[in-house]
Image (tube, rainbow, N blue to C red; front, side, top):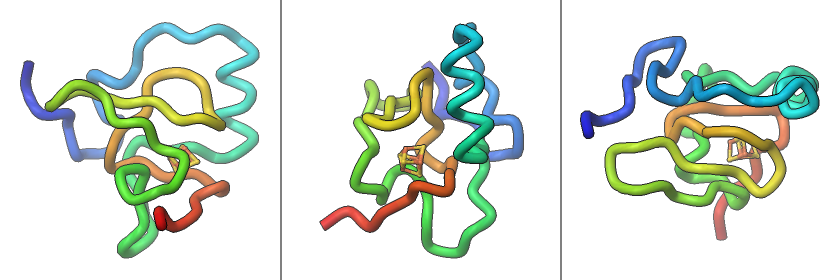
Length: 78
Ligand code: SF4
């Protein structure tokens, strides 16, 4: 599979998710393209890496998570 799109929208990470998951993503203002310098899902403590070139997951936010995404619960990976 191709690398996940880095552009806004994060195509490939937009798998169907249920309403509850959508609500959580909205509440934490998850976005598929981080606008925070040096901070993105791939260096967040809660990120769970997916197969190479594909979206991962997050222990807080349900649904597919783009490695270059971001949300308000970002915490530095230690
Ligand atoms: Fe990305 Fe937020 Fe999950 Fe961290 S907590 S991996 S920033 S969605």
